[in-house]
Amino acid sequence: MALISYLTTVQFDFGAVRLLATELSRLGISRPLLVTDRGIVEAGLLDRVLGCLPAGTLGTAAAYDGTPANPTEAAVLEGLAQYHALGCDGIVALGGGSSIDLGKAVALLATHPGPLGQYAFAEGGAAKIGAGIAPLVAIPTTAGTGSEVGRGSLIIMRDGRKLALLSPHLLPKLALCDPELTLGLPPAVTAGTGMDAIAHCIETYLSPAVNPPAEAIALDGLRRASAWIERATGNGGDREARWNMMMAAMEGALAFQKGLGAVHSLSHALGSLESPRLHHGTLNAVLLPAVLRFNAGHVGDKLEAIAAAMGLARGADVAAHISALNRRLGLPAGISDMGVRRELLPHLAALAVQDPCNSSSPRPVAIADCLALLEESFG
Image (cartoon, rainbow, N blue to C red; front, side):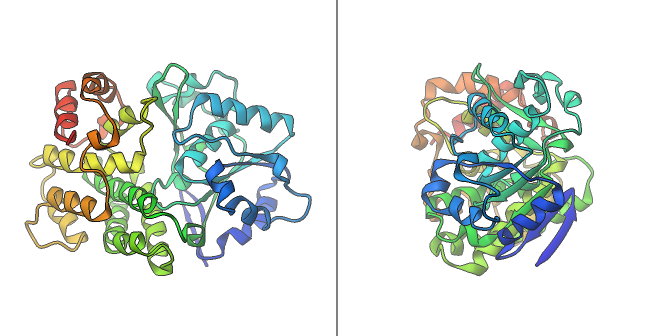
């Protein structure tokens, strides 16, 4: 078992979820609300986690399973109401990035007055987020977002905007990273979430901020994800591949404290659409080649280091390699294949240019650039 303390505390290995009862006791949580989604319930993962707790500690009535594919303010308020009604004193977020992000927002409002939107980074809300957030334990069931070690939470507000809550106080008190919970994930989910981890590692490495430790972590995560993503996608039961993909996902999020870029600003805009509802990691995969080409010439020799980490020959075209990898993984060739209509692109470009991820882009991003990148990624 690897005990890791970097930004937060992580218990990482097969069987880590069995430490839940001990860790809840250590954190002083006696009545947690388990935040998850229906897919997790139907896959039997909720029951598996409940089985790790002493009898009477947590019943199914204390689980909120209404997390949508892209978490919403309405769902946050539903979870918050259940938290207060049941007299809970902490949260266990079980699932992918959506459930963990929702759990963070519920933990925030459990101790901070509403409305939620006032805490959005774009609204200057980071300074309003204090340390007294309800304690949160994160248990990821996918290997992609890394939200279990991230300080952010992305929520679609009631006005339709997808806004980021950002604060070190939003970091989970503990992450239980158990690759066993990812065994048997469908290929499309494995591929999309895995490419999310790759996008995190690449974008944070290319960010111009000075943070060598984060860059070293990003390159290690990229090496792992590049080496194992196809094997994990092709064989859902491959334990070695699942272990390495979960580690790569965690490393991507540990590293992106350094900043991200236009891939994420564009995917956040696209992810705010009510219809179609789009998978964040798959969007990142589809957008990444165009953004890599956009940034080429503004990142020094970093693309060479990325190529080396991915096992490519010196001078290899990283963007072309990502496009080919997406095809091999069975991911869409463009956002049009995901149901996005061309007439929406100007509106999406206007949303994307306002996203805080652009502040750490290696190349300045204007609204015309966002529109051109969306057109290039349209397919």
